[in-house]
Length: 239
Ligand SMILES: [Cu+2]
Image (cartoon, rainbow, N blue to C red; front, side, top):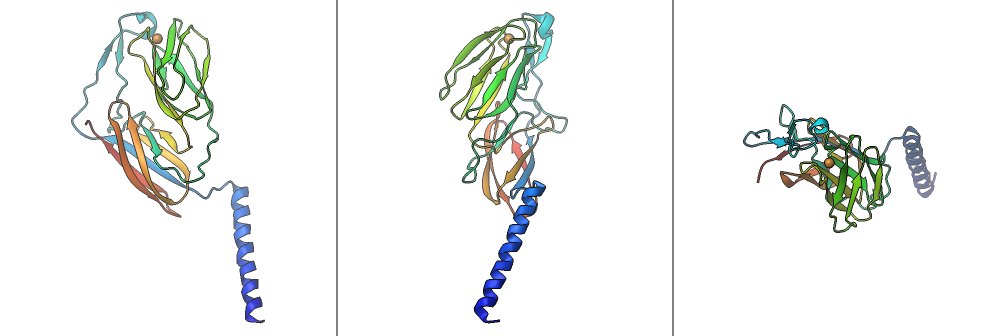
């Protein structure tokens, strides 16, 4: 076989193998990206648990509430920290599939306290308590809102701009929630034990941004390779 034909045949063979693997992965639902798995941990002086004075509506809210602005697991895993890629890969999908974001009001707390919603997505606020709450937020990129919310009424808002929004209830001063309006899919909220997973991240070097409402923001570099799962341990402390 002449050299040229041989090279062409080889190239065609390599191409067909690549196409075959790509189709195989697509059928199997395998993505090309990798997973970043990690945990966010508190380091520093022990945190004293703060009590929140419940002055009204104790029949629903309870008499004693613990502050939820920094909740740690038994080994100092930080709950409700938001982990994201500061510089997402190019062409990061804007309209990704997230289940509809919901934030309930239960026993006079926002549950979950921290949620992520995509830009253009809707957040539904609920009230499971048999009393009146309200939901108020003074966003800058998104229109501010302030709506009374009787029991069992659902109120939905759509957010058009990426922003970190604080949500309050004016009737119960301790109530606080956070809506993270995200412009790309690489966001995660840490679990009770401080763990998080970011999936389908293309190989590359990234800066992780980690935010927690009472500890602020820290960053950490992470490299995602072609094979192994990237694991990260993040430490946060009081500033
Ligand atoms: Cu309330």
